[in-house]
Length: 390
Image 1: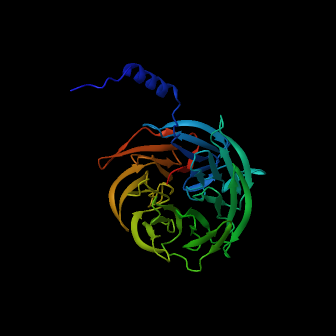
Image 2: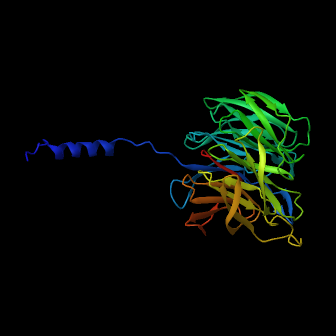
Image 3: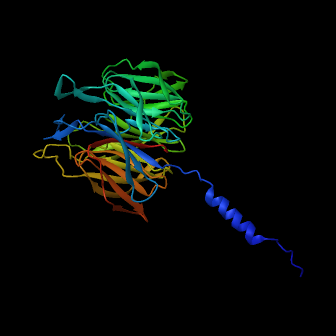
């Protein structure tokens, strides 16, 4: 056999390795963004104004490794009133949007009053900074960015409206406001379908989920609402866009509450599953692959210690998503007054916000078991959290 000589092979490989080492590789930041309310605290089961609080803030969390690490922080208005989807992150992780539903009264700092501010934060600047602040509506709560990044919806709990903004090149422009026809509708959570042609809007004031038809900045309400349960609140949609989940907060009187699945693969959209999960299921999030639904219930932890419904801890529940049905997988304690949930891209690390402890709990999900890691100390009440991925 005659060998074909490869001249200077070692020299060529060495040069190739040198080029690879010297060439910068594109690296995804893999971050979560937490909006933190410092002005609201829980006292004997009531939400009251904190005394001499630090500013509300937004914290960037590095999810690129385990355990997650706290990154930079920027002062920006935030609020625990409203679902934990009051923050949204652009797909390229360049910008975050944070809505503020309440603030301290400038004339009477001991009093909490409605807020309407929406902050646009440049996450790539060093340090991150608020580059624009606009008025949405009273009680600005849930925020959603359209799949193409060009449209922003904000649910305004205090006035029964949805604010519409266009976003281009890191700038927001007001494009109108949708009036739901009921000032007490309590629009709370909002989520786009994956094709961007529709959005779901939870209305905890009149217990329905509205389907919004999206045609550019024009938004119309479908005359047929979707019925899920009492006081629908937080909404999430799977990556494939076939299923949405809605938390039904109930009346807050100690009874068990529910989570519902909405089938988005048929027209009209419809509720296909509702399961009991416990009291106060505010936190709700699908894993990135859509195979798991995480639910954080407050479990009476916001009640006064003397209440018969009081509990010292909330609970995290994991459900397998099997077609259009849910099957419980695991359950573990979390902190009090739990809020938002975020998954890492691989679905193995789960973050849960604890308002009372002012921490973000960290869990690993491996081989069908949940294990607790070291919580992240935030220094303010973590009230909403999102990532750029579904």
